[in-house]
Image 1 (tube, rainbow, N blue to C red):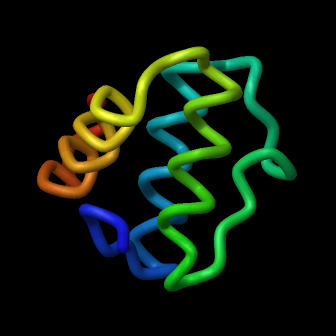
Image 2: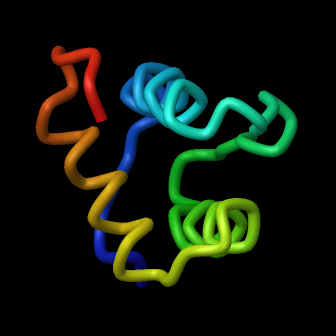
Length: 71
């Protein structure tokens, strides 16, 4: 079970932040279906060459500050 829960609506906003931080990531690479957080985290780990803890921290930060444009 993933450490975080992301709705499809929230993911659309978080995805924009992730793409700003990692501008080489495409929409196709960041496809997400609600409930598939583990798959998303693993994919991002591979794409940005970071560990799980960092990716979860980054996504959690984006989720907590959803209205802020910064990641």
